[in-house]
Image (cartoon, rainbow, N blue to C red; front, side, top):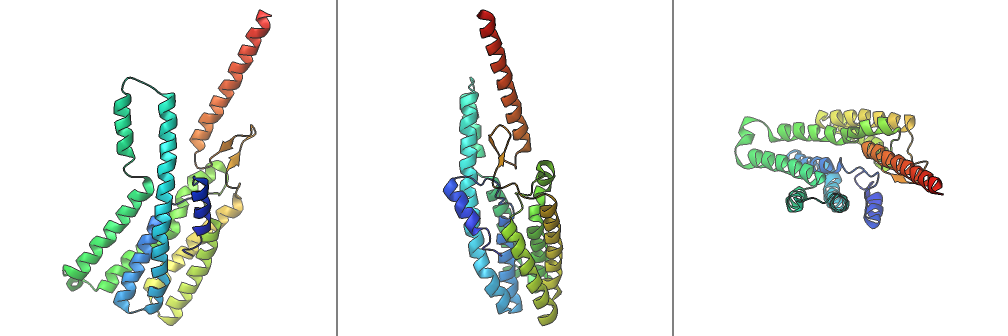
Length: 267
């Protein structure tokens, strides 16, 4: 499941844009894999360890790749704005842009996840947290929470799906592997280990995946990008910008018609 977005991210890196690829779940993927590695340490479960170490490595690469693309997209956006809006306080605006370039959204989420897990591990392992509660229980509960958030993360684009009537932001390969992954972990956690820390969150993950599947059926994907009737390329993640671009296009058409009318009057 963790390898499902690799091909699409490579394509996005070659194109220099995320387009409809949604990287929001990837920081939670890192937290999920890290948490399960720690849980496997406390429960001596080699299968959980073997399944999540590769996922941890892959998730780091996914986050780094998405951060590069978000930086590039923000730079293009700032450059376009600076060309269209020139004022006396250009230096102040440039300074503000530099401050905003320190972190992109995926880096903020990634750092938050890593900080939470780092603090939890330090407290449980070296600051006597194990005296208050069993480390496996604390880590298990936290990783369950992280896992549910990871499985439900694509639903954060629900508003985009409903507004655009397209489910491009839901990654199909990951969704399919979600069904396979959660089903096997439910069987393993329920019948082999009898561990509710494993089968309960995966059951919730399967349910959330089914909800995403319903959205995909109800609102089919429109492809990598949306094409308007005028032939321009629109990003389905930016319905507001689409409206602005459309209004600008309409304004340009009206200006063109007025200019044509003036020319005819002069003639």
